[in-house]
Length: 440
Ligand code: ASP
Image (cartoon, rainbow, N blue to C red; front, side, top):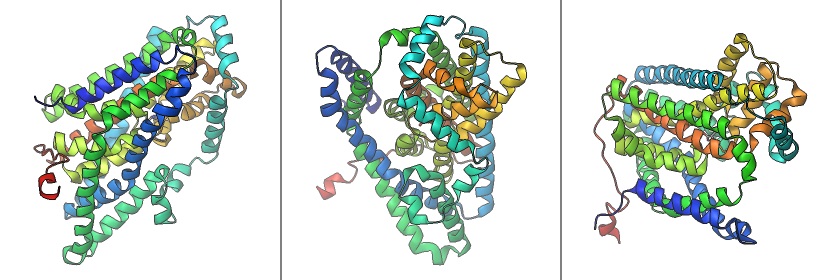
């Protein structure tokens, strides 16, 4: 019998995880059982993905740059990538703002619901910590640039949150390797080439466990979710965000079909394992190794492009997050009767763009930067906690959805950049057991 394709196996794991998690909310102590005995397997899976993220960026970016042969190509790819990332993010925020202004999800929220949400979440540690984190980010306007340059390469590599520093160091190393000439750089290049193959093989091996891991991750999300009544109250707001995200997927498929001339359904099918993992882990950083493997081996984007576009995208390009920030900011303003002018809405476009660049690629990061977006439109700081409390109940499911878009956006842009420099080729899939017969 032909083995089910990976995305189906992951999807089945997800559905079973959702059902199991839901079932475990009924018996006494069920939630704790999921937390203590099921959730660790999901955590281990996410740890494994994060474990290989830094070696993968290092090896693949060096391989990518040293394959380039001349630096001007890198400049071309770099510039195009950043410009296209900014454009897709602006499209995303605009879609979000148009929808939230037309559909007005904040108008229907009753005072009673606002009071209930405020009482439940305004002093929740989750909300309070997000406001504190945002204030740290705000104090240094050029902090983002400053933080990009490491003062210790090993230090940067020891912390996944410092991914941009690793990218900076690796590009510096790769370009210097080009400058010493092919002959002298060869041993180093061979080392990183081999490391790159090894890490991609690790991705294949980790993915063998993905269907079980997503079961654990989703069972835990459902079993630890809050009061369902509050979730229903926010259904319209959540619906607007999800509709916006769905329109973004449509936008990507148009770009893929018209610009790269590839079948959009094929693209979605090939990238789907990364999307499903983005949904299950809520982290584009954790999903990065899988996104890279899918884009290179299953879609045919050359490493010269993907090795730069994808890690950079995982950290700075967050279309889903910025769309959500636009919708959430206006929703909060509508619900709390805070008037927004057209100028305020344009300010949201600018700050949500910067905020999505500055957001970390981890669960819940988008909400931290939302604080900065709200402040940029003069939202009173004493009401921030109430504002965040309004959307906190549905943040996790929306985080899962917006992370899918963040990852899909990166993959789409990598195809566009690859096509524009003639580097979108034929996919060459490698399975985990290609050489297994020889070594078993
Ligand atoms: N979880 C998102 C990501 O990792 C960021 C966010 O929107 O909170 O891409």
